[in-house]
Image (cartoon, rainbow, N blue to C red):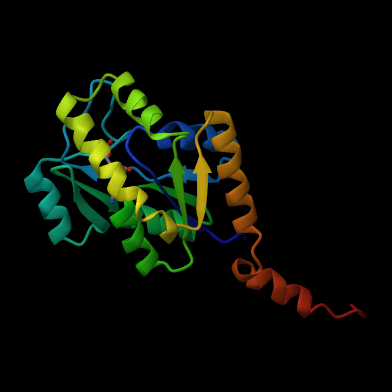
Length: 205
Ligand code: 5GP
């Protein structure tokens, strides 16, 4: 069986991580996206269990206490966290599990799973990021400013990541992302079982 793989994708809010991941998931049914829990209220376009599991702060704190999260952070005043059981089960099944999470969560995941792959999505330039954030029409002016300030902090951590994905167009970025996943799945270190089978082949059989 092909071994599972944990892929983290980070990048500033508005850079298009969600669109890239959704496009790329069409290429291979073994790629699945983890749905996080958050205490942020849903946007008009978002649905429970599709974009997030929406929780009150109290419900989220109960999840932390019950050890239901692989990692969690407070970001721009709200909690966000990755559900532990679902992610571990899908990786064990051999799936490529994508976590769309911010930089602190990414470094926590790397600590827990040293062989995970960390990808960072960058916009063509900073102005374009601001245009995309304002253009999506879901954020207040304060929220846009908070996310841009946070983006500048996140850029400082880019070199902790394994790969950069430039989002000039969704198609190009999804292709780059898919190439990374294909290559990572073929790493010898991830395929020891198959390698052992080849090593143990007996020519006379
Ligand atoms: P948004 O409110 O725009 O949906 O998300 C804000 C930020 O939180 C984004 O950078 C998103 O990737 C990140 N995020 C979403 N879910 C999680 C999570 O489970 N853990 C962490 N650490 N970050 C998350």
